[in-house]
Image (cartoon, rainbow, N blue to C red; front, side, top):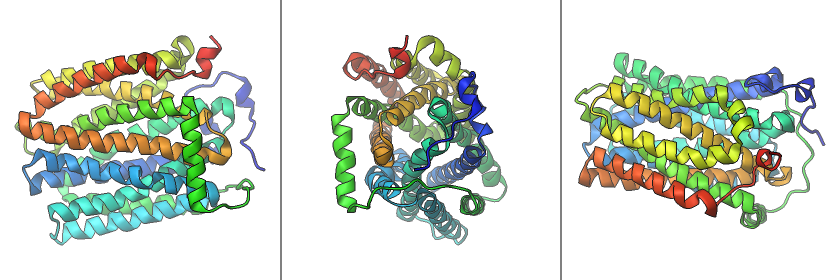
Length: 416
């Protein structure tokens, strides 16, 4: 079996960027960056287009639900297939799927046939690609980097996700202002096609797999392991709560931007980019924070920081005063999410890695879909700011409740 490379960097201090010295990982990571930029460009364009089709805050928030729901429904079968099939080829298929669905969105937008149900349906179809791609990527990373570098490789994974959250909205904002929503989708399709070509040419020595088993049996094995592993189960509960709160925040941002009285997409895309900027910034210092304070401290303290930031957003009367609060929210999100992601990775054997990470991803996206739908509906009844304040209070309360009940025994805590 081909294992992860053992490189000289493993025996020296691991920096924020050291995994990128591994060319196989750097190519994979670059494609992941491009894929996330495409995803966030499309999500921003879809959410903003929805505000032009309806005044309902609940329906605008449903764009986030339509994006997240495919992962909740399909990530586990996709993870099982990634464990059973050649992971590179499966990853390539998901990129080609995104090319097709993003192109369909572009043509629907340019021909003027978009309606609220059609937009939600196409966003859901586009989300299928991301749902199937995430567990395949998560399973590929430990095959191309060594175990000591895995935590920082996963931090770079988070940087790619949140970097896409910065670059995607900013690029989408330019395209929306100059050429309209269809141009965003066309550019996203081209970016996905370029990513697919890079993975098609990527050098990947697939490890030998055990004999193939029926898909249903593979799914049951993944669920059984997740249920029996306390460490993985705790990470799943915590990631569900984290994404429920953060996705609800993002789902309310388009309506909040409208509430500031500025009717263009620039305010919305800038506010969304602030979340990503906070996440990108914290990646640079996260290795030192974990080394000094431990992952357990990050996971238990992060929800309180996130709740305080959400309260600040709710109280902000202008976009410029909400921006730093969103920056802090993005930093807390990345710090907690990355620590949970790494904990889940290290709790899984390779033969179950894609399935286990798929269950982890399902929990994240299921929480996100739930949070967006519930707080979007709440905003329709009480307004955007009261809904944000309720979200902040709930984030504080759940953070306190999980503090001892769902503790995770991180390796760095065991070594302290």
